[in-house]
Image (cartoon, rainbow over all chains, first blue to last red; front, side):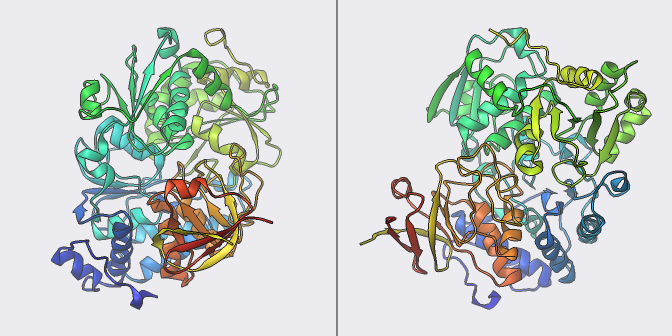
Length: 429
Length: 141
């Protein structure tokens, strides 16, 4: 089918682009450029632009197809042209044997990990690359995969990435080029859906649950559009913004959100909207927040088999916060307690002394991957509890478990009690 | 008699099948089981339906970047829909179809239809997609 491909009419390519497309830089770059230009045509791009870095979500093992694609690129001699970090993989390379991961799955995943490293990618194995030394900077053109990372890079940092699907991010990294569309362009970054917060008390805005719940709403009301939020009274920390983006990119397809007075392209509402009128305007108060909070749980009882934290991957600050909550406590013997993070972050947390409390609590850590991307859960686990809206959103479909969403403190207390306990006085009407 | 829609071709091809329609976007990661073709997002209106061999009509894909990987695996396994209709230039579905052409020489037509046409699609109707981008819809029964 390769030979039948014809160039789209209104896409202007540089000499260098044509060289790649014609195979002058090898068959790997040629395949990647063919995919980039076909996508550019679909997106209506008139030209490609340079990227300075990439984050590769294609590292996820999703069955034979993703391995076939990776190994095809390697066999064609493909190498990345820009610094390219790797998202989570299908397996915790050193730790998978501690869990009931089928060895065939592990072997295939390990092969795929090797394939991406063979192309020159950096083995960061994390879905929070913005919390590593490879964090991009404001205004930088990048091609990132992983929905939560895209939302964070665009919104919190002000770097510029379209929402790159798996398989395309690596093609962008190999060619160093992407279609000049969407969130790469200033006009594509204007806020479109205006969300006014009203009557949400500051104690709620400062609480653990507020950002993932708000993110869940943003995703639902915005779809693919860029939401703008006004009315935030309490300055959020970085991990709260991370949880907001992950939630909004799960319940919807948000690649960029603006928080007026907080995020870098939204000093004022007018700046966030780039002078335009919003397409839709919505008011969100406590009734909507309560509905969204309830939607993130599928289980209503108090049964609990496992607490899982760390989607996106736990940060150093989150390990510190958790360590304080765990001090002097022990988990209930029937409840597994797991944190998912990156190797680098775990090392930092260990050196800072934040892992000791987790160990004596009876908790464990999985790196490189997460419970959604590696088949690690024991069969007996039917009821999960988490403070991650992303875990809460995907676990029922991907793992077939019931899920309870609660704050970090609720998660710890429930793990100790052996049943779901939630402190809801702040949220109840 | 059927009604004829002119669609925009994202990935060309001919196909026919029974329509499976939702106004709600779907992430195929956590939403589509590549081993069986079942729609598994328990919060989605099509939860429990099987997409295999159907013409799946979704406005766009939601959320995760991994939708493409799941669709590519479904195409490889033969559990993918026969075709996908969307309302815009959804790049995630299209990319999976393009990569499937490149590495498996298998095609999955992806067409974008106008929002008004999309709103007139109903689950159970028969859809026939042609290579020129025309879609013939025949009402069920």
